[in-house]
Image (tube, rainbow, N blue to C red):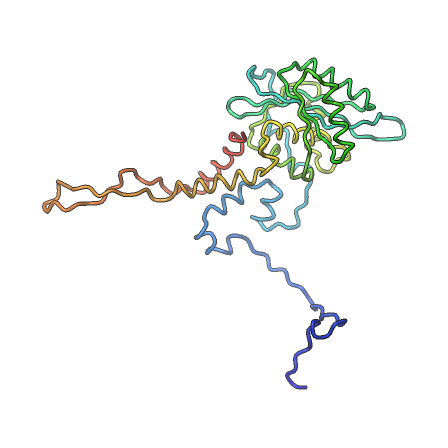
Amino acid sequence: MAGKVNPVPEDNPGIDPPLPMSVTFIPATVFDNPALLRVNPEYLAWLLSLPTLERERLLAGNWKIRPAAGLYFKREWCSVVDEAPADLDIVRYWDLAATEKTEFNDPDWTIGVKLGRDRSRGYWLLDVVRARANPGDVEQLLLNTATQDGKRVTIGFGQDPGQAGKSQAQHLVRALSGFNVRPATESGDKLTRFGPFSTQCRANNVKIRRGSWNEELFRVLEGFPDLAHDDEVDACSGALEMLNPQMAGWGILELARQELEAAKQRSQPQPTQTVPNRGRWNGSPRKTNRAEPPPHRSLHALVASLRLHEARQLS
């Protein structure tokens, strides 16, 4: 029948809908939507504050980018120092494994990262311990390291979900009696969890104490996520989360959102007050701003504020 539309699947159960003959992808970025930028000018700064992978996708429209070595860490982002301040808040976080190395296997490593935070919210990577060992030797390693670190260092480790993970956590807490121990349930994928630590390094807010372990740490962090073993990555992520417990709940993107909201509030005009102008011939009042409203922050200033917030206000 002329003009009759092909029936939709709902009217004809069992009949598949027609498939498109071709699909066209039309690339666009935020700059193609000026109306959005006029209504919410801070949105661009929020995009600029994202980690590398998300920023390339959401700002540059580069949907072909994939996680690759060198995107999340470069050794030149961090200064290597010989001394660290004495008044640091320090944690030692362990990424646990429990398999010895043999000629027939290639097991994960047990890694203990010692991370400190100073009063200016700067971070100091002080030490890395690594071993491939059986559960008994791993337990002894944790105890020996805790004794060397001293009681002022808080100890943490990842707790696997389920009853087995709870039992292991309880056993290690008892084995480390006399020390401050905080098991932590890890959630989220490796890339997401490592994002905040990567951001701190990119902002030059992480210093690394010189040691024989430096080169191996750089190799693993720079090779992430392409290496078979990236246990140092998980340990660094866990240490930063221990020093900033709120990160596990809302993450670095929420930090950026809160800063943008605060910037938006600061950009609102301040209330004005009417006062008489004795200098005018008719004595009519004039309006004056008792407190000048802050000038509109430039994009660069807002981005700088976001990066400073990421680097200094994670507490």
